Image (cartoon, rainbow, N blue to C red; front, top):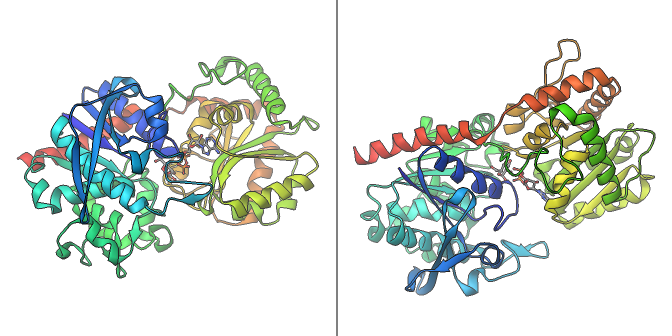
Length: 485
Ligand code: ADP
Ligand code: GLC
């Protein structure tokens, strides 16, 4: 089966968060299971610099409202040798950032990603002829829309099945009604059962309704977003209406990239057998890298995250003094909301060496934190899947999480009596529950044999991509059979 994966990010070429990690790993896993895979991403400056790729002959163009936009296609190879196609457009993608710069989104993101989706469709029709198009998040939402709603593309893709995967319902691609003509679609699609959403246009909604099926990245998140309006962000009814055509498939973790036994960002390599010594060296290395000296053998808690409301920063900020009075030290690597960044910078200066906040995006440090921390904290308000808790388990670092979305599917409370469980979990989004859970984790940390057991359980967890790739292939086969059958 020939599968085309279309998305706005891909590790290592262009990364803002977990979407990149998924697109960097899923195609290779599908290839290993015998599929033929092509990936299409925007030709951002960073991607063109990192990918070795060749410009294909010929210039193509697509309509964007009343304009026509010309573009070139570059072909190279991505992780695992998959075919990688980059859509090259000087004005839209030769920029310093992916989605914006200096904490602000680019003002023309709608135009950029409408163009990207249409250009991807044209490039796929010319170079790939896929059996299945698997597109991700609102940046690639226009693809499942136009291949069914645009008469000029409908025929071309009549035998191509389409799956649309949602990585985060907080970003739906909602724009003004006045922008609708940029899509070059009949107004009949601006309807309550397609793209219209409270008088505005919603690209994710259009994709969910027009794709042959839709999915999200964990079973629990799939349940939550169809039942809890706070998490469905207004799309809960639309998702529910798709019945068994909306499903949750848990992401995998890319153990080629995230594995302490072969991680070149670490001071030493280690695995389950030499975890005590390995983690100790990595902890010393981390302490010196971020300048947080040891204080009486307290456990070191790490966080690596976008600083957004999703990730639970308001919970951390509430009574940060109480948090800092716990018997631990906390290292946060994060970037995002400048107001949140400021709160934590200030807290750091009052923490007496117990809190260290590093602002920015730093992949090498992200790896060092995974390895050098004792615990990995994710107090998320919601979490479609979350990858960093899976990485933490592989590094022998105990996740401390709120049971939401993929966190609920991957982390279970450790019970010192039975020896079962791989982390520490709280349920209500409440500051006191976060504190109590950290206190429980610290108490177990003080019992070396229990802690070792907990860590072994973490090492034993296997979230490799094989299982998810099999599941996707099943879905692709079913959708393709329906389409051609
Ligand atoms: P999300 O996609 O919601 O940000 P995930 O847990 O799925 O959350 O994935 C986050 C990915 O981004 C991980 O690979 C993590 O290491 C990385 N990451 C997040 N913030 C940073 C940062 N400030 N510096 C480096 N890597 C980061
Ligand atoms: C989104 C979600 C995160 C998920 C990632 C990859 O960014 O916030 O929970 O792990 O996508 O699917």
